[in-house]
Each structure stands twice: as C-alpha cells, then as structure tokens.
Length: 201
Image (cartoon, rainbow, N blue to C red; front, side, top):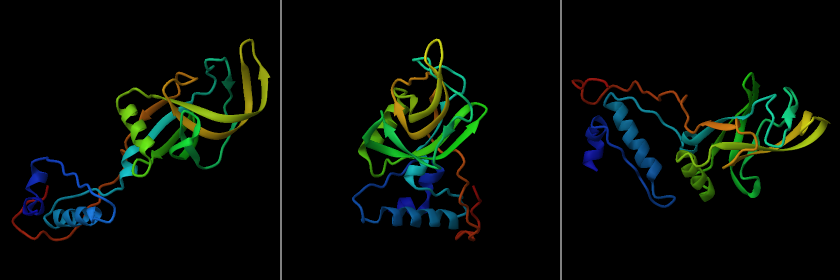
C-alpha cells in the first residue's frame, strides 16, 4: 500500500485495478489515492465506469436506402429524449440507454452508455465492439406514413421505439463511431502539495 500512496507508479505510467465484491471499499480507496495524488501536485480525472464506455453513432443517414430499399426522409423521425439500447432487437437484452438523440446533416446521430457495471451482456457487447466484430446499429420503429418506391418505401413519418447494436446493420452506413468518452474534463484540485519541493505534473 505504501507503494501506491507515494504515487511513484503514476510517474511510471503504471495502471491500477481495484477489484472485489460490493461494499468492500474500492471506491473509497480510489478516491483516497486520487486525493493524495492531488495533494502531491498531480491532476486527476474522476468518472464512473459506464461513462467511460459511451457509444457514439450515426444511426441513420437520411436519404440512403437500406438493404430492403426503404428510405427515411429528414425530419421524419419522432422519438423521446431517451431510448433503450438493445442487443439485436431483443427486449430481454437491454444493455444500456441512448440519452442524446439528434438530427444532423450526417443523419440521425445518437449517444448512449453501456451498463457494463450491472449487465453481463453489455460487457460482452463491449468486447465485441472493441474487437470490431460488432459495428452496426439498427432502429426499431413504427411507420406512420410512407409511399411506395420502385424498391421499398419512402418513409415520411415514423415513431422510434428503440435502437439496437447489431452485427449486420440493415443500413450499412449506420455505424458505431466511437466507444469511449472523450470530453470528460480533468478534475483538478488546487490543494497545496505536501512536499513543496515537488514539481507539478
């Protein structure tokens, strides 16, 4: 423990993993080590594990036909402010939630989190995404107005109910674009260092 407290492992770019059952005090130990690092003049970033495994994606580029020929128009989608994140459209496999849903020039873009702390299947899906075995997204929706095309339909309005991570997307361009939060600001402290001769890092 003394080796961890002195912080030399931080300077050597080593990692620390604290494991154990719920209630053991893992978070308390991590916070104590972070506080000590701040008092020694280092900067730290604090976050919960699910935040580190956010998924960003383009769920549907507007005007692009999917594998069955359906095209969704811009402004056609009605959705709530958040949606369940499913694995392969299976309602028994909720693996997270989508908490940012927006229309952009690129199409419908979404951002959400995998519940890897609490859902074993979410951890499995994360591993598959990291291995590039799973890259696609697929929407579960109810069409409310559409007109036929030579192949498929032009969908003018729809109600969106869920978005799934899938191995093969119906629309090939519906892709997961990243799987890690990259906008978490550093949580710095201005506590005077215990050793005034130690330089800040």
